[in-house]
Image (tube, rainbow, N blue to C red; front, side, top):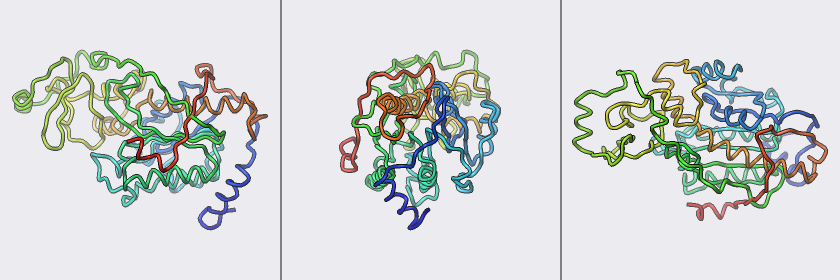
Length: 364
């Protein structure tokens, strides 16, 4: 029953808790919303999860996803009934970030893409997954003075979830890319302190990411190269040269964030060539076994929209830790549910933290 735009369901859940879930054996299952080329898919499979549904509106991304994972993502999520989505344990979603990003319009919910989080809520309200991991740009934390993030957290809490969030950087998870992302986690099993990763993973050297013999087509013209080198001298080699909107050039032994809509020469290796599609995928943590089936321009867009795989994998693992502790302790409705979270996922100790809306400013 849904009345008052789902508020009745929310009130019932708050009083009685979510309805019982079907007890079944086997690995935990997950769905991959706004899936792109499957960064969340790779992370989930690394942890032994079974990806049973995916969705993305972009036909090129769906083609790459199908070729690499053997499953066909559904299209526009707004046209899919929640009842038609299979029951699942974990919901994963990197919902559209352009309305909140530095490079994008920063219009927030004034942009129709900024309201697609409501589609996630619609599915959560119907399916009640045990855990949720959401990814978005760092600017989500400050969009409309933090009110959007507070509303997201409050909406999830209103449906009975323990919720936390944090800004994580791909540089801290072994990738030579400075990519800061808001990660929101939510679980039906209650937690006090969420087990965010504490130790940083050493960054893979940029030289290990770069191709040794890139196609000449990726090299810029002599004019562009001369102008860049006239205005900037790098301190390290190899390095990625970054030109911001104001024309300022800087270079680092890592890449600034890949962006789907940035200028063609936004990032240059050693100030002389563009990143290849394979290099961009490596910067996001995709294995070389990932097959490139789309054009260079499409792959560049797809890599720029992707999630950093080891970063989101760490967040998913934290959610599995909370669920695993709940299963071990026989907590609430899950006490008789037999599950497996895969051989690569350890239970470990659990330390949690739950953020209230008033704490959002303290994180910045």
